[in-house]
Image 1: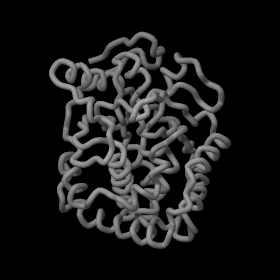
Image 2: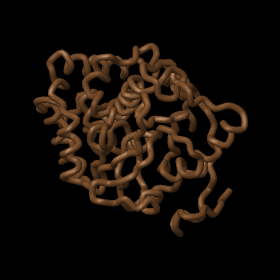
Image 3: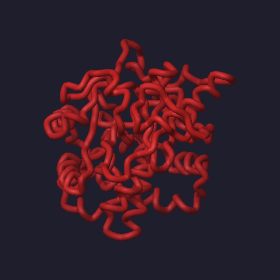
Length: 307
């Protein structure tokens, strides 16, 4: 099914409308986001239908920036962009913390070969930045990023392995497939944590770095003076392979928000930076592990996951 959507430009004019359904709920959460945003009945149906309409085909001839999974609308970019119509049409993938931070944490957790000589998480980040930008993959980040603030805490206070396995089970992954690899990831992270590897991370340095190097991909998000800082997500969307989620357009149309993860992009990055099939698979899984461990410190238990 295709429809024409006003204000989205000719390249987005005709789009297949995807069917989106709730697939699970997160069985963890130490935060507050989503606690009062559960939807039922017609409101939930409309929300899911809009999630389907705002996933657009990603270009195959270039890498889009990978924004954070943060659900709050983008109101400006560090290069001076503020036009709401321009931001409405902005194309970006999403992973926890943005391109390089998400990749760095996943690669560290997987004990990736290219980071074996990294002195600390900041050194690992700069090495990853060079690797990805040399491959043509741009960095991205945003002001006040929770994932950046949680670099060490998301490792020091993780979701238990049994609960993570249950979470993957809700997404159709069998425990036998992930139990061993998740154990290896947790062991790697714990070893690095005990060695002080994550301790020197500075979110302000991170923001300054991306602002200086790629201001066109450093976002300022809509905040609010409430206990959740404007985080008003009603769920988490797992974006369809080959698509990106137009979060600003979704929020403008519905007045609602949704976290989003573009996990096929994580798989593509893992395939590019891993040195063998085992390492690639572990990096890909570590992206997902990190996303859930970051989310754990932000969301309330029971946040609904849709796909």
